[in-house]
Length: 282
Image 1: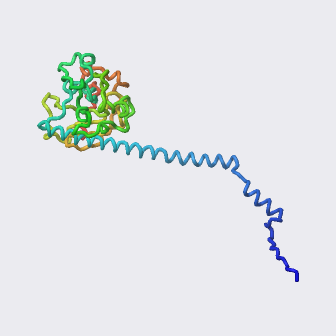
Image 2 (image 1 turned 30 degrees about the vertical axis):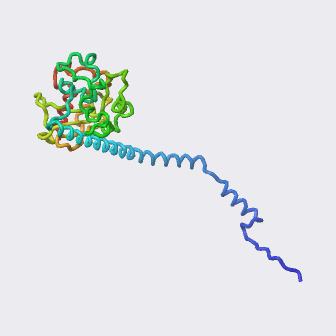
Image 3 (image 1 turned 45 degrees about the vertical axis):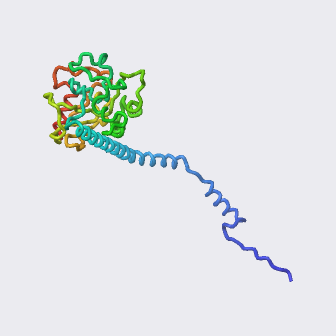
């Protein structure tokens, strides 16, 4: 008896149905039209325009927080150094000779060429011919006070003194350039009161200022809307610039070499104006 073969039959869309094949093939081959593609790009652009400002603000806030953490580390280093020096603050020669514009410097540089008219003699060179000054003394070659010089550099800095450029100075000093100057990203208020008396960390308060974000020139301003400020009680607080104090600063580092003594009226000295504003707003 011959064996019968059963062949299944599909209605409408089986392989032998030409209409079903055309519908299936056209569905798989169909792509985006130009209009659909433009609408997709427009939607993506709108979403990006909504998201990017928020991401930028979040990134800026994170960097500002890192800057505040750096100043907290600097405050601890200042306290440790003060404990070793009868509560006196680390010495800044630039603050001592009345040049608040230069207290961002970690080294003195060549006092004969740059500061020949300084009323106070420059410190004696150290064994490696480097005149470390102010905050630079806390971090040179892994000081016991500040274990890393990276804390002296703000992640928001956009000027001439980033960590990548200045950082090697704390580890290696080329013997051919013993008088080269190096800078941090923070401005140091110095070790003296305005009347010349030495500051004692034990009697400073929140109304006093120890360290602020750099403002040697406009390029050194880390945050355009204000500054993190390390105060006398070692707290770090945000100071908002409400009167555009930074706009009076020199536009570049070369212009900042102008001696503060050349500005006769204290009310027009941009560095003294900013220091005064920082002290008025604890």
